[in-house]
Length: 215
Image (cartoon, rainbow, N blue to C red):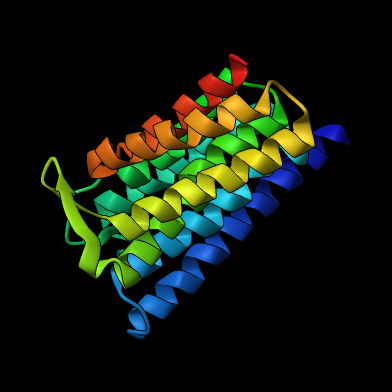
């Protein structure tokens, strides 16, 4: 019975992800939104959903889901499925690193709050920074290693990181909050800036999980 419940949970999670992908793909195909917006919508929705997996899935199940997600992303790239995610103007391997990061974070830590905080940095902070920066940051654009960033997007990421960590410390009571709140959001924001071609999807969550484990 326990085995059947585990399989059912995995199938339900996979179904939720597929439905989210399908909805965003349909919105893109009817030309409601641009690819960058739809790509970041999936980034935010799926990533935020994944951030809370430890609350109802085992660590082994999360690792298996991350592996399955990676296989799906590679297959979708090869078969050119889900255009709303892959048809972007700039080169990026962020979708591949997205799945890899979830699996690696689950391997590095088995503390639920740390996992949630790390993955939310990748999904919510990074996703909102891109969406808000694209929409409102046209007048504050700068380049790092040839890739466009905006001051509005950078500040958005820092504010999201700070908020995530305040909630993390309030809920988990781990470590000394105030010194960490001063340096960790700034360091994560710097990594998000230099993580070109989507590599911030790997750099930021791994840095956050390692930093929080060291407290």
